[in-house]
Image (cartoon, rainbow, N blue to C red; front, side):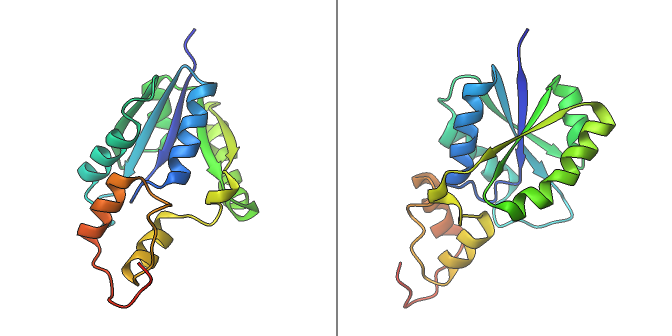
Length: 166
């Protein structure tokens, strides 16, 4: 029996913290589907197709890992459609846990799908997609926090304010 998990997120943009969680999830499950959740009502920094391409570039060689796009769909419905038995979420702090726990309990009650929480690597504890974009826009150097392809895309999509440390 194949064990399959969904690793959901907006990945706008993907960070090294995301890559860390996806890599570790791939050692726990036979297959991990990195689900880019797209809400057409929200405008991201990167178009969803570019997020997909960046993710494929970053994790394309990982065995048992694939990327898929989903819009306006409950996560539990995605899990059902993919025959996934688990959702994998990375946690950076207790605040993340407090935010994620009610959703995990609701998902389990709705369909029985379990959520597996993976603690993030401490070196990425402070890294979030929104903070990456903000620091980059203000001239900060975020190159060690995102894959090289993401850094290049970020430099193109988000102009930097002159005079920063980047």
